[in-house]
Length: 52
Image (cartoon, rainbow, N blue to C red; front, side, top):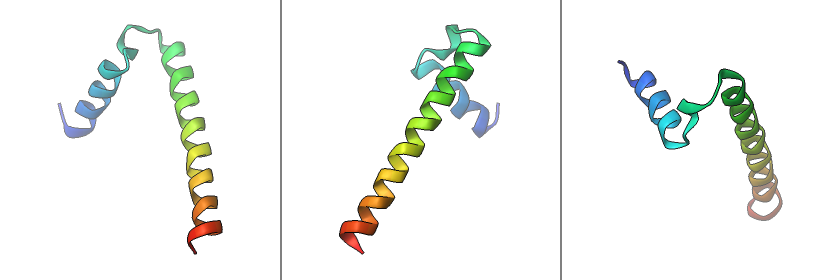
């Protein structure tokens, strides 16, 4: 098991994704990615507006 496989395994075990079906896991991952994009966009706008 290499480093990337260990991180994926840790992610699945930490959030309990190992007990979900493949489509439920995919849906959860899509929601997480979309939320991270919103947060990243908010943070970049914050830095553009108030820091730089």
